Length: 84
Image (cartoon, rainbow, N blue to C red):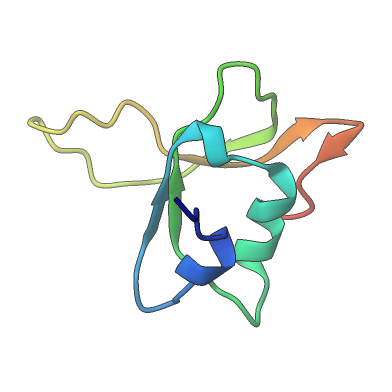
């Protein structure tokens, strides 16, 4: 079986959803670059550090399962995302 690379799935007209097995900090920076602008949702590994966490305003809904909404940089000083 041939497994496609992540690049084959990039299309700014769609939201990319990936599991933590595919998570790499350098990929996050690729997704947010001006030429890519790839919307994405990724379930993070438990050991990923959140840096400069900033809460975002959102409309709360009583029936929502969302427990938090924030922006941050990901990773340790040795390997940290460039963008929020």
